[in-house]
Amino acid sequence: MKFDLQDWESSFYVFENGDGTKYTVHVTDAQYGGLYVICNESSLWRWHGQGDIKFLCGNNNEYTRRAMITIMTYHDSKFDDDGGLE
Image (cartoon, rainbow, N blue to C red):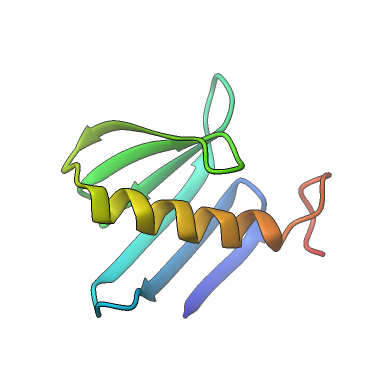
């Protein structure tokens, strides 16, 4: 997995899940809480932690939703409560 961890609300990931699908994910701070998760520049999601993800627009399917939960759970595990790298 390639990733660029700058800080909690500004990260970039490239990864492949078990079925070989490649995802490019940009994470950025959402104005009204949570994090925007941009997947393959074709869908937008909002993450609030602990599996709480909401589809906002673009291409929506169950497999992408599962992948976004996986990468965001990983993302959260890499940062402490103050937003710094652990």
